[in-house]
Length: 294
Image 1 (cartoon, one colour):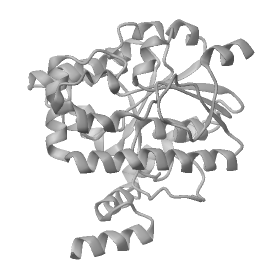
Image 2 (cartoon, rainbow, N blue to C red; image 1 turned 135 degrees about the horizontal axis):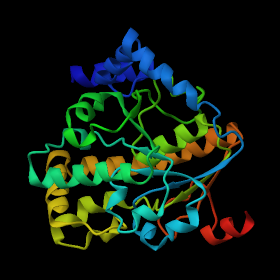
Image 3 (cartoon, rainbow, N blue to C red; image 1 turned 30 degrees about the vertical axis):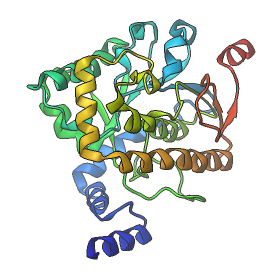
Image 4 (tube, helix red, strand yellow; image 1 turned 90 degrees about the horizontal axis):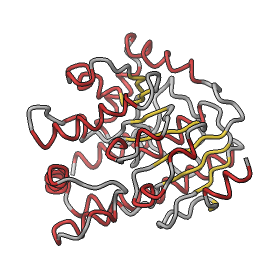
């Protein structure tokens, strides 16, 4: 009961929950302020341009990545599991799932996931990586990431309907339920005025109700899920529980609604080019039609 009261108190102050206050304090440490200040180089870097944010949803497997080779693109998490991932010259790659930062390279199941994360660096020598500051020790200590430079951000603020703060990754930003949300936020900071979403079905929460029934996991991912990865995901579900996964699923849709309003406020157009799915917060348009207009 006491913890719930404390959590509500911190939400009123603008923090997602009480332990997120630690991230605010971290963001105000001198050394961490300097780390966040480095993100200023991205401010309005692509002002007035367009970008494509590619999720790992089922429809992503049908995208000809070569069609986007000359576009500004964002990829997320284990994008390298797509067999044709090298066909895309990703400009920015974003990590946000904190469960990835607990992977153990001595565990065979985890080692596989870590290998795919590191393969993203093969996309382009100068690909820019973004991740939460809480992952800094993870990336510095994992041997397979020794040659990868990371741009860090600190989340934890409460995102809500009518959020008034600007997109500013040199300061603490909101917590979001998906990596795509973080990509949108970062893209807006970079000055992109047209943001196109691909592979964003928003059906990942269905895994929680279907995984134990041996139903094909293609409902969540566009790439093939190996046996090792299935075991890792199953461990995650056991730690979180079905109720938590479904609660996050509801927040995913709600936060996209909030982002849509924020984008409209800032004069940014977000278009969902995903083939199918349940995301209806943004206008829809086929990828073919977008590319024909360019």
